[in-house]
Each structure stands twice: as structure tokens, then as C-alpha cells.
Amino acid sequence: MKLISEKTYHVLFDIGIVLKAIITALEMIFGVLFYILTTAQLNGMLAFVIGGEINEQPRDFLWNYFIQGFQRFIGPEQYFWAFILISHGIVKIAALVAIYYKKLWAYPFAAAIFAALAAYQIYSYFFIPSLLLLLVTIFDFVLIGLILHEWKHKRRIARAVAA
Image 1 (cartoon, helix red, strand yellow):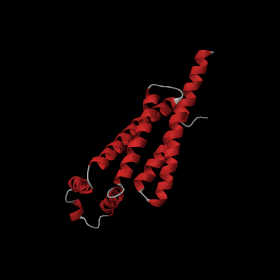
Image 2 (cartoon, helix red, strand yellow):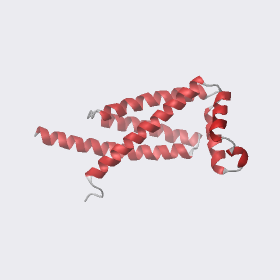
Image 3 (tube, helix red, strand yellow):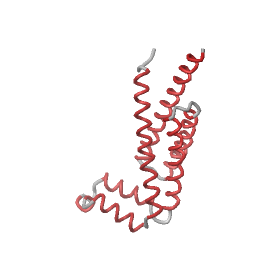
Image 4 (tube, helix red, strand yellow):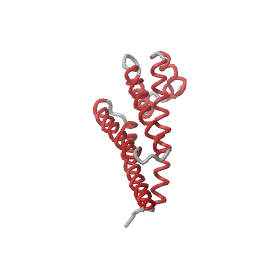
């Protein structure tokens, strides 16, 4: 007994892939910014984005959480984070492009890559707890399940056509 239809699985898969591409593009943009901008410029960019919010609500939990999280990535270690974000982004984009072109080998490859990166994210979470990192990791595990389901479905179709 199936909980949801194959069509719903496919729609969720497509949505997941698009969301992953957007998240990955944002990671790569931040990676490039971390590489080319100084700490002072990044702090200025943050101040521009949030405007006077932090001055108006200095005890606001959400804004303080966001600012403290951002501060962990800039400074002496920002080149390390730039490398991590850009290199992970390149690998993920390559996997997503191969899935876009419906290469059967790409589905288990992407699932393995996303699983390895999710494992690293879990490891990182213990050193740098982040709600955003936790949410992205949960999303990655859901997406891995959808990718594997889509791969099995495409293999069944390919076998049926070949028979």
C-alpha cells in the first residue's frame, strides 16, 4: 500500500531538486563573497541587510541568533569557509546537472554525495550548532529518499521498456 502516488513523489522530487539547486547557488554566492570581501566589508553588508533592526530590538532572539551565526563564518576562518562552500557547491551542482539530464548513474551518485555532506553537516553541528544547518541536513535526508525513490522508479521504467 502506497502512502502517496508516484506522481506526487515525482512532484516532490522536482521541488526538492529545485530547492537544492537554489540552496547550493546561495552557498556558492556566500563562498565567493567570503573569498573576495574583507571581514569589515562582510560586516558592513550584514548591517546593510538588517538595517536598524538590531538597534531597535537588541534582545531579539532571532536577529541575535542570525548575527552570531554569521559572525562564526567571517574573520580568520572565512577563507576556509569560502573553500568549503564553493567546493561543496561545485560537487552538488555537478550531481544536480547530471540528474537534470536524467543520467541513471547520477541518482545514486547524488544520494551518496548528499549523504556524505549531510554526515559532515551533522559532525559540524556538534561544533557549531545552527538551526539552519540542522534544517538543511533534515532537508538533505528527505531529498536523498526522494532521489533514491526516483532512481528506482526510472530503473523500473527502463527495464520495462527493454523487456
